[in-house]
Amino acid sequence: MSPVLFWFRNDLRLHDQPALQAACAGGTRHLLPVFCLPDLEETSRWGFTRVGPHRRAWLAEALLDLGGQLERLGCPLLVCPGPAAVTLPRLAAAVGAGTVVCEDIAAPEEQAEVEALRATGLSVRTIWHSSLLDPARLPWPAHALPATFTAFRQAVERAQLHPPEPLPAPSTLPPWPPGVDIPSSLRTGLARLVVAPPAADPRSSIPPGPGGFSGGESAGLAHLARYLARRLPDSYKQTRNGLSGPGYSSKWSPWLATGALSARQALAGLRRYEAAHGVTEGSYWLWFELLWRDYFRFLHLQQGRLRYRARGLGQHLIPPHSAAGFERWRRAATGEPLIDAAMRELQSTGYLSNRLRQVVASYLLHELGGDWRAGAAWFEACLVDYDVYSNQGNWLYIAGRGTDPRGGRRFNVARQAAEHDPDGAYRRLWSAA
Image (cartoon, one colour):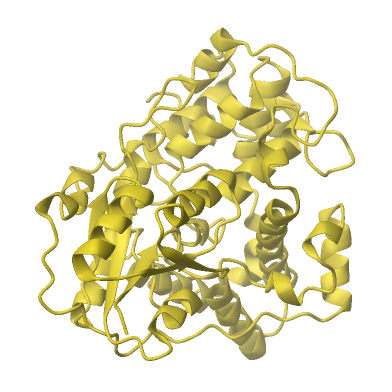
């Protein structure tokens, strides 16, 4: 049997890896794990780099951790620069492979990557494994997905749908093909990615360092275990709208975003916690948020490119984009203290609380006249927990161009400050860059 290329995408882990298991099944004797590094200098249509320094550093940590684990299994990770449709055919030719196995991602750019790769003549097998629930086992087909999250959640809970148990990490993997001669130009990806990380900001809600936040699978699993051991699920509902600090929310999202932690692994840990300590409002709300994450994924399966149009799912054209307003917002120069504080935190740390993400998005769209797609692109550049499904879904939600029947969200900034930062501590903390 010819060697198989396993293409890591947004699934940078070994635990709960159905796609990797599929690549190793059927008598596969030789495996070559590959990650195709995106163009780190690519700019968005709005004029800034699509992968900012914090995302870049987080990705580097995830790949270094994954590479170390694969090295110990005798099947090293190859990080190659360039698009998959260029890189993987060259690798396949070098090792005599005809098949690529990878994660299925329902977003348009990621779908186009797979189609371009197939056009080169390689066989590409895609496996869906980023959601809790298997979309093929839902009680409705993708085109009949309930129109609102509430209807979706209620239907899932009435049907008592449960995700599969997460798969254990493999203890062995097939080795690389023997006598591999890989061109040196295809071995330079990790060196291009690993640069001096941004200086750590002591105010960060995701502080790096021992016991803190690092991008790899090992750190993600350790963080999940610590979060549960500290019994923080009990208070999650009460604290989830906090603005600053490591403990007010679960902080699972940075690892979920790169796939260094699987959603099923997180939920399995939560269910064991509930079995030991009981179900609380807070632990239920963590399930609720994970289910929102699933819903945004299934909406992509249903609507695809419609979610990327300027008007989204709506019928009305969007108003002209205020480039000046967007620049003031992006550079934390709006003159509104809460907004500017939040935008400083985002740029300084690559993170922002869920509450403030909604507030700053509303301010850009409804007060400054910015295009929702520009805001989504800036979040893509900055956030270490950037997830194409959730980012697109949340910006459509605020803009009123998604599935929500209430037509968008417009937040009163003064009221938000009074409710969530009544003593001004957050604004003072981020009053300067």
